Length: 447
Image (cartoon, rainbow, N blue to C red; front, side, top):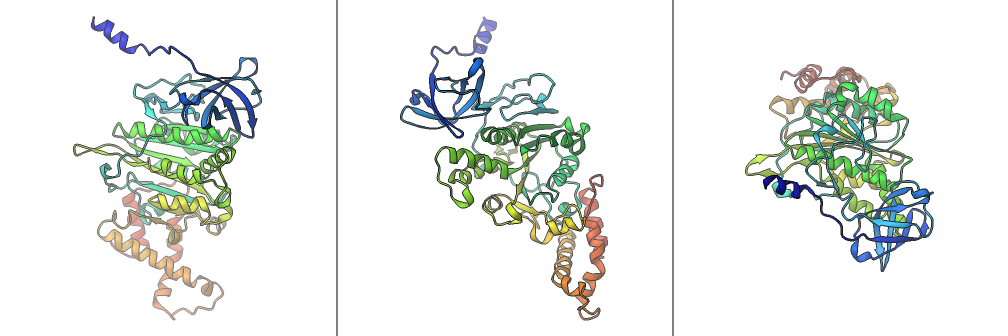
């Protein structure tokens, strides 16, 4: 009898009816469908039966009266007036991740993107657009994480559960910095979201940046730039949902997303197609509503009966428009995250990588996560960088005479060694302890 009960529980409920609709118009990216809108909601997944019985996945993004507005995940070429639309209830609202997804590449819909066969469906459904854990129940962010990058380990020390942003223009080294974090960061699982990336760079990123040895602890969620705006947006939510799955198991997860800007651009396309008014630099109000919903999901998990769950340490890249670090998306994201790493084009032009502008970057966990003499070392090193930066123009043109200021003389003597310390090749990783020891030696302080 028990076996029969178990079997009955596993039988999925049979749908006694099916909801259909019909395409009546297509304008831009928006598909108007005539249907009973009382049975749908925003986010409901549908299929559009195109030519030659080719089905196109779509999602409800709005409705008015008996007309629903849909956007497709794929190409619109197969859609014509009169195409039948099939509603799939709650399909697409949840994702079913599994531990076997490590080492796999998936698309924005949570389907296999590689050639290793279908993905195993997990047992626990996780909402694609889950709410963040209650703020008052979250664990504290206090345990440091080793990134392997000297400048970050010391000046911009990160903690487990922290959300950090990398802000830079194009071609300044964002992807390489992310690659170093993926290679050296001490964590259990890495979830990588490549949102709107160039298709030709995927294999390069996997082979050179991730590496086959690290791939086994990584889950890659990929949506290339030629895919629809809805697919690019969905990929970001899928990556965060996979990260939450591993966090709920008590694991330390590094979630890397490149880039939040392309997620915002995708939402702008969707908003404009739905008739939203453009606001700041063409971005619609829904963009600024969606950003915190995505970014706030990262961080430490809730505490249950005094026991901590896992962490999502997140690193989001922001492609600043025209190297303007105060443009709308950069400004909005900076206000949500727990710190920002600014990459400077002039530093990169001197072949100094990673091109981190230390004085304009900040980690909100510093100096609270520094111990004892570490605070003194970092404070003194920052002071030396600031002093030299203030006098750099005078020194270069020869207007400053040595001996005029003891503080400036010290900065001039140390700056070359300090620049050597902050520059680092891809194959050169350092631990937290080693990073602080080297910095202390550079500025002549004992730890």
